[in-house]
Image (cartoon, rainbow, N blue to C red; front, side):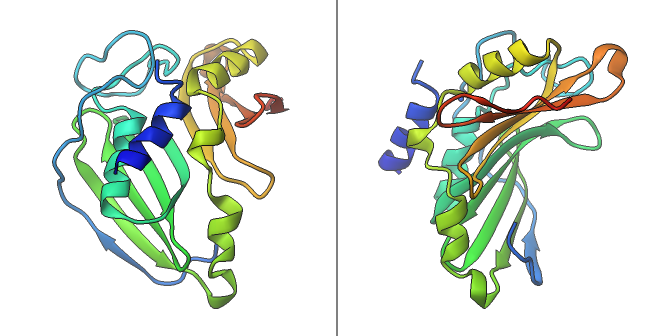
Length: 204
């Protein structure tokens, strides 16, 4: 656990698909992880609702680091995705994916309370065993801070960030930010290389 928290601390600068056969799903409540901030800025009103939320400044009682720690407490393996997005009801939550050699485990947590919303385990097909983990593991200790990637994305397109994710790819890990267009006429999806900070796609 100490090693896991050390890795996520580096990502925050201390100071941010395989085939899917039949899956087993569980839902329920888990004890909330420690309440720390996800990024510098204002706090929520306690509802965790989407709409006018800008994740560039918005914070939640549960940070992405807390979400990763909770996922690693439940599953052994490497982190392949961290995502913060609203549900259909507009409430923000984290999705964290953990890869072992033989399985992909996914857990969703409420960003306000830390409660476990769902969890799922998918077994890899035989030809994916081992290779998916090696190909898609992020390597949190090697990526740039979330805030730095956000700054770069907003240099590309000014506007509120309504969701973000950090995901392992065969080409290397990348951040993706959904930035609301003027008038709410859709989103730009800006992709940033998570290792060197360069822009991979402007979403135009």
